[in-house]
Image 1 (tube, helix red, strand yellow):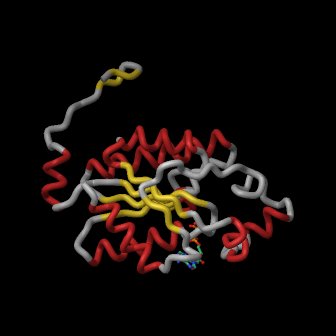
Image 2 (cartoon, helix red, strand yellow; image 1 turned 135 degrees about the horizontal axis):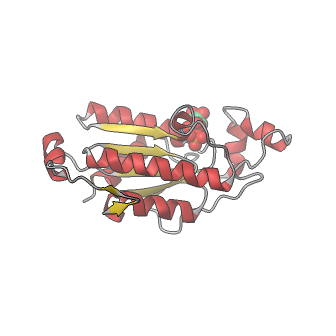
Length: 195
Ligand code: ADP
C-alpha cells in the first residue's frame, strides 16, 4: 500500500500472536446514543468488570478524547465526522494490539458509524444502541447541557438542535430506564464474548 509516497512497512508480529498472548480477541464495542443516555457510565463500569475478569481493555470516551487527541474539533458535522474517524482509527490500532475497546460516543449519524465499522472491520465492530429516550436524558441532565441547549447557549446539540439517527440493526439495545447497570453489563459481556 502506497499513499503519497509513504510505503506501508509490514511488521513481523501477527495480530493473532498478540491476541493469543492476552487470551482474548481484540474487538470494539461501540456505544451510541444521546447525551446522558448512559454511555460513559456503562463504558467505565464495563471496563471495571472486564479488568476484574482478567481482560485487557480500554475505554475511549467521547468527552475525554476531546480533551486531548480531538481537542481541536468542535460539533459541526464535519468535525463530528473527524472525531469519529480518529476514534475509530485508534480503536483499530488498539484492537490490533489485542485490546478490547469500549467506545462511548454519541456518534449521531449512520454514515459516520458506517465509516467507523469499515475502519475497525465488520468482524471486530459491535454496535450497541443506548436507547434511553430524550425526555429521560433531558430529565437527568447530569452536566446541565440540555438546559443550556434549550436556552440556546449550546448550538448543534444532539436531540435538540442536531439530529440523532438510531441504528437500524444494532447487536444490542439497552434502555437504561428499564435496565440496571449490572444487567446491562451482563448483556454487554455477552456481545463481547460472541465469536
Ligand atoms: P452519556 O455518556 O451517554 O452522556 P452518562 O453516563 O454521562 O451518559 O450519564 C448517564 C446518567 O444516567 C448518569 O448520571 C447515570 O448515573 C444515570 N443512570 C441512571 N440509571 C442508569 C443506568 N441504568 N445505566 C447508566 N446510567 C444510568
